Amino acid sequence: MRICITRSSRNAYSETFIRDQIAVFSNWAEVYTIHSGRLPEKKEDGTLLNSKLFWGLHKALKLVLGRNNCFGNYGVKKYLKDNKIEVVLANYGMPGAHMTPVCKALNIPLLVIFHGHDATDKKLLYEYRNKYKEMFAYATYTIAVSEEMKKRLIAAGAIPEKIKLIPYGVDVDKFKPNVNNVNKNTFLAVGRFTEKKGPLYTIRAFYKALQKFPNAKLVMVGGKNGMYDECEKLVQELNIVNAVDFTGIKNSDEIANLMANSLAFVQHSITASNGDMEGTPLGILEASASGLPVVSTLHGGIKEAVIHGKTGFLVEERDENTMADFMIQLLENPTMAKKMGINGRNHIVENHYQEKQIKKIYELAEKAICN
Image 1 (cartoon, rainbow, N blue to C red):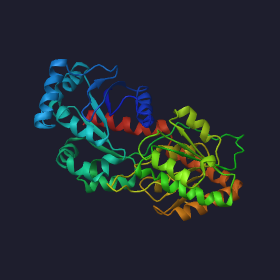
Image 2 (image 1 turned 45 degrees about the horizontal axis):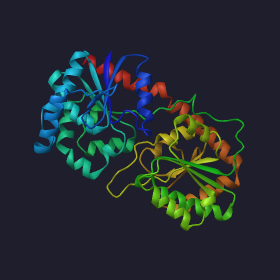
Image 3 (image 1 turned 90 degrees about the vertical axis):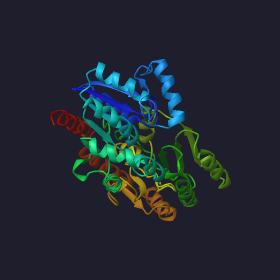
């Protein structure tokens, strides 16, 4: 199989799931990747898909006519033809929409996998409403990572018979329990400081737990942008600077190490004001694979990833008081926390084994070529 996989950015630290997808696909297929922009602009090595002449025309016409011009497609079409691509896998709905006319013109099957905001952001859904309809009609398969996302895609016009539910997979050899982990007081949060991740709710819930367990710690991993300043200000206002550690960005190996040496994972995901929702947060899956109980919310794919009372606890969105209560339960009973973590690990191995999940996408690509 000669497959072209698109991604919005080549080195986005938050998109390890796409890097893993490409790496695993390479075990079975000849993989070509293009990236940068909703309509991919670059080859894997960073060189432009279009010549400088076509690139200039594309940019000029984009300013005058908006997104509807043919020059941006020229380089992508040539790349697919030159490399005899048999099928395209587009990560995110927007690149999928822009790849639709390209694939249609070349009669190449298209698979589109949605990840979160591309299926829920109100402004984006309105902007892409017509492009999405064309894409849903042409794409052989549309892939959702959670049941909630599947419902959202159908509401946006996706054809139910073409939608396939394939949750993310986790590298269970990298993210695994540490038998020597004796940490009984550290909560770990990993993710960008965005509204839908609910970091302010997590901090306030931790503050309430801290009143009963003054030695508790909260480690928050993520780039220092977005809502980071608000989070730092809240920590200062609550006078808990010594209890909260903002680590900045960490790579996957460093995150795996943090997970192997924490009590539990916390993330208070919410529906953002613009409608943006999680797909299934990879950090939660990785934490469960690492043997950590998870305290999170009844939101998006989290409802399927975490089994309430067995692998962690789930609260209603914005209910920081109940979140704090569950954090206190884990601090009070580390033996229960460890048992939940073991249950979580078993759940991930059974339902989110990385190679198995990515193989499902590979098999859809094979079917698309044969159709």
